[in-house]
Length: 154
Image 1 (cartoon, rainbow, N blue to C red):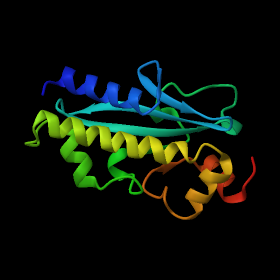
Image 2: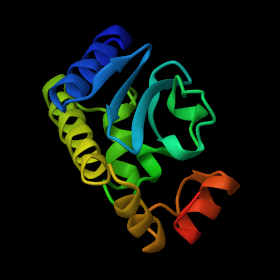
Image 3: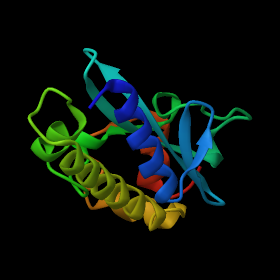
Image 4: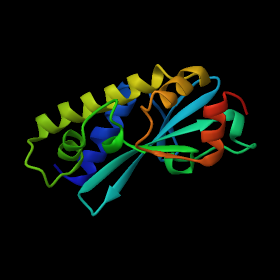
């Protein structure tokens, strides 16, 4: 599989999962927050799918353009509620010996699991509950977002 084919595969999987294009990223938006996904290239044939949470109460009149600009940021590899590190590395690294059909199926499964998880957490209360249960421990949480998630208010 070529790099271009892989990018197309991820783009199609994100679209099938209900994420809308957002510049060079994808977005699933609720009334209180948006989950933003950005595909990053690491070392040419290795990729990482970054997932960011933009809390509207903290956005200070600006919107994140990609996952890394959000106040909460996770890579799919480290997002344990969805998948294991090895599964993601296999699917998102073209160096792993995985046939094209197997890679396509695995990428679709991982993207569906991730977006399904996020769609169930489109309210502040749901996100806060996930944060407090430790589901979001493997990512970056900006100190202001941490304060809000711990206290329950902005």
